[in-house]
Length: 153
Image (cartoon, rainbow, N blue to C red; front, side, top):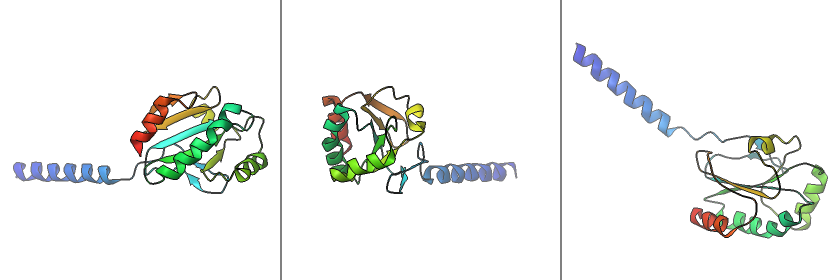
């Protein structure tokens, strides 16, 4: 009888562990994009770029961000985060439309993501693995960032 109970307990523990492994990964945050989508989906690693329309480096890097988004849609979740400081939603939407940028964009009006990720300047690039853990951070678009992005394609 004792042996049977031990086997039952072991089978229950294994089944419980298997169910936990099969559960989808919870996204590291939830936000709504300027087009109304809930981000991130939590299905893949995430590339966050924090930026502002008044930041010249940020604007220079936007074509690269758009290109990365277009070429990695199936393997990487690319998200643009406008920091909301001295910005407004209308300005950000007009800027994105004017340049035909379709990369999902969050307007961080209250600075919640800026605080969560301890962003102290723009641009800031952050890579999160599929578990939501930060694996890389860069202040500018560097060769190392490009290499890490290429490895995720």
